[in-house]
Length: 89
Figure 1 (cartoon, rainbow, N blue to C red):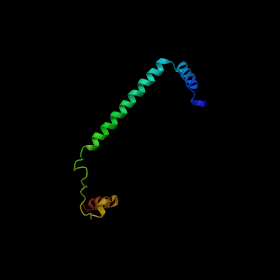
Figure 2: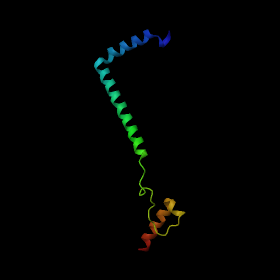
Figure 3: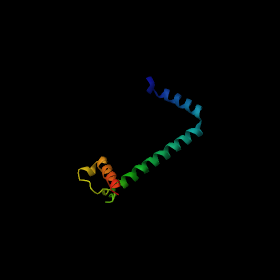
Figure 4: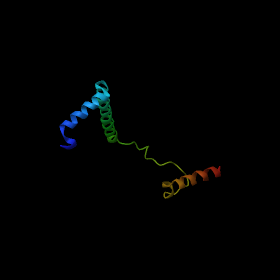
């Protein structure tokens, strides 16, 4: 018995059909199917994109003269180099 009794589910289904109507439920089912299809397509596109190697230009470091290798990995080091180059010229 309880909430998992099949009679309760039939009554609940009838109430939902009476409240929303069959046309709205059919449209809701179609919309849900379309959204799942779009989600699956987006996930497969993402998997295909991750298989493509990234070009070397994405990983290249910006050119900033006068920065040591330790400083070039920090934002402050890059900002310092830019400020020094503006003060020189």
